[in-house]
Length: 378
Image (cartoon, rainbow, N blue to C red; front, side):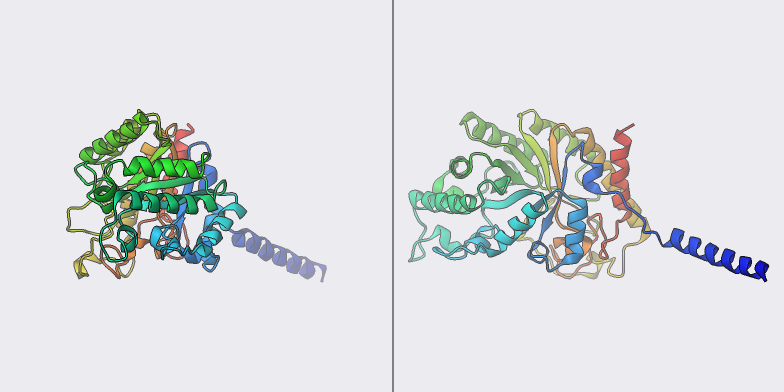
């Protein structure tokens, strides 16, 4: 009888031990910890995430990221929808979320040709305003928005996408009405509003030589005028075949030679096919949905997952090797489910551009970037 009791106890203990070992949760590496000696790791948040409604994403943000950028709520049309009306509630919630979780907070964006109400550039009769009127509106907007978050938002994308692909200034209404010193004025107003905040110029396709040269010329001009500009943001809306790692490396080094910080501000890798020439993020681009442009609507094949992982590994090899000048890498989204690339430039596609899948699980690309950090430690 004692032998039967022994067998029963031994069998129960064995089952318990097996259960404990096999149900212990697997612990994945944490991005912000792995890269703490290299650069900050961030994510762009939509309003559902910063408000706490999307706890699925909030938990990923709290675990993996140490800096956040708002996708839309600080753009002019969102935060300043009418001449005498500001809508600060969503931005207040975003900033509160960042401060509560000890995150480096980036304000995006103050001056842009897109998502700025038409009335900003017009008088009551719909005619273009003069230079002084637009400058006053710019200064008032910048001082009001930055002033509200002075000392709380750490850095600002002051001017966004001011250049065309050939490196010349984009023919925006800011340029047409104010003149080419509108960028100088924007940075001056931002510095007045919060002398301690970092100030950035942000753009896409700077890895292309003509546009990069234009940006270098622009930043040199700002610096020569004594303007405070702390860094340049390479948006990082990349393809599987663009830019080359050589293009990325040379771009980082070219801006580093100016003595400013370099940030990857909106990183994602588009895995879907495309048949247009633009390599950037012009939001006006929209192409009719075609089946051939949406090949992975039932899931990403393993072969493409592995190719994406290799692509991210090659990008992070460049970034970690330039960690002395790269201060921040921010992904444009938290997981695949909320990436803007599901709906741009073709609405309704299934894209897979980030490190976490639609269930919040790390992808092979996640493991690939972790290995790049580990590789640099040996």
